[in-house]
Image (tube, rainbow, N blue to C red):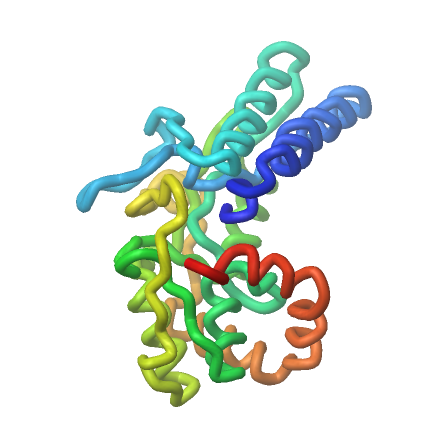
Length: 250
């Protein structure tokens, strides 16, 4: 999401124009099913209570979420106009192996491993619902195999955590001090809370998340510890320019 603030055009080209290209191919080839993998961010922000349902109006607040909402609407338009058999999934925050370290969890793991400061936006009390990537994949598979065309499904892990709670888990697991935490200037338009009601996919398609947050975090941290060569490779070069542009002088 952060990159969409500094480079919104790239997100429009990828998420809107890119989705249009895929939908045109699905229409022309008469594809059996098109799954539009979206995000809970298209719904906007929540207060302290409540959760997003599939009936929540779209109200995106960032260039990233606006581009994903536009892609969702394109999928619906192709379904209505040309009969493309589509479904839309809207998932909460993913985590797990191979996640690029611009995202919160791998960013904090990498910095903690290397005893670098952990940049935390604002007060660190922003709330997200976390889902292990394997569970997201099984949910998409359930939609592909079982869902009637045209239906939308929210996918969540039922793991609401503040950013500071997530970071505390990482620091304790790695045996690192909380003094590594550095609160930095908040990013523009930062939504306070997202939370997913995944009742529809659970009841209608029989899907359930199988990895709880403690287990998922242990698996994720262990993976990054065992794959530091991969991690060191992806944080070299252009990543360093990105990191400095995001966190220096904040």
